Each structure stands twice: as structure tokens, then as C-alpha cells.
Length: 121
Image (cartoon, rainbow, N blue to C red; front, side, top):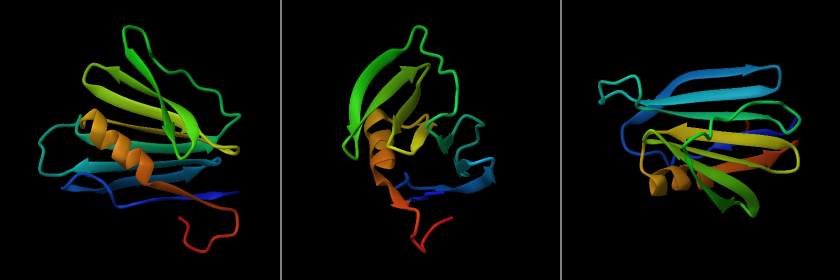
């Protein structure tokens, strides 16, 4: 299975709060511990492209963007920004309550290392 590593280009104050890696689905939650709110996390999910899921886009603003030369979608709804894109093997989903430009920076900082890299999680 290919690996992904998240760069450290997160907004100031965010640290890893939760990591899960089950059934080929990787989940990392980053939280700003200085902000006193449950809504102040950034969540990263990596899953095989054949994984089925549902994305709530009702009433959302949708913009098509490019992340690492792959087409993606940026969804803005209720002050939450979600960015979803895929490469040939995996679907990536990052979401949080930071600004659109900050969330795009975070998405662009995610590096796919491939199957044989040593620096994986």
C-alpha cells in the first residue's frame, strides 16, 4: 500500500490529537489546543479510490481546484472548508474551519511518497 506523509505546514498552534490507520483508511486529526472549541480541528483522511462515501454539498459553494496536478473540489459550507482530491491510488480529504487559502496550503503540503519510501506513517 502506498503511503502518505503530512507536511508540517499547518496553521500555528495545531498539533496531532488523533491518528488511526485501519482497513486502508488513514485518519489524522490536528487540533489547535489554544482555541476552546470542538470545531477547531483539521481532519485529514486518506483512503483507496474505490472507497464509497457521501459528501454533503447541499447549499455549499463548490469550486474546482488542482492539488499536485490532480483535479479536486473545494467545498465551503457553514464556515467549514473541505478539499477532496485523488491520485491514481488514493482519495484525500482535508477539512477544517481555517480560511480557504490556509486550507489550500495545508492540502498542497501533503506529500504522497509511494509504495517504497521509508519515511511513511
